[in-house]
Length: 123
Image (cartoon, rainbow, N blue to C red; front, side, top):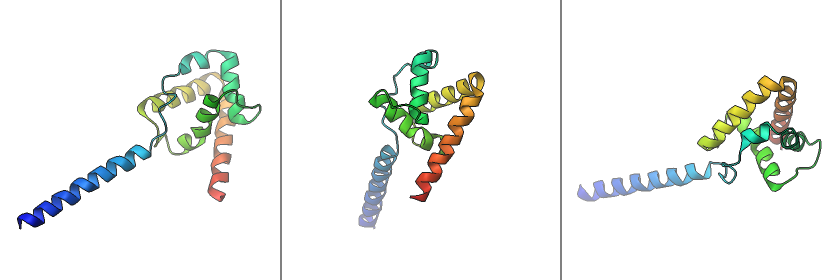
């Protein structure tokens, strides 16, 4: 009986460890969590460079631009399921900012996001 309890406990601990490891793999990198996204939103040049990168109007200006715009479509579709808490905050504030200040651009972003997700689903 004691041996059976030991085995059950061992299995339970291993399952919990596996769940923790898998949960950690399900997050986007926090590499850019500390960027000043509010300053970027309020700087026309910087904001437009991110927008143009995401919309594929112009080349991405940096690896950061490419990385952040690269996860945007999936984050939007999954309601930031893989986002860190900071990324959820950033995503929500950026979306709210665009809806308030540039609703027509927000609609274009949403349309491109949906199109990107359709393309990924086909593959």
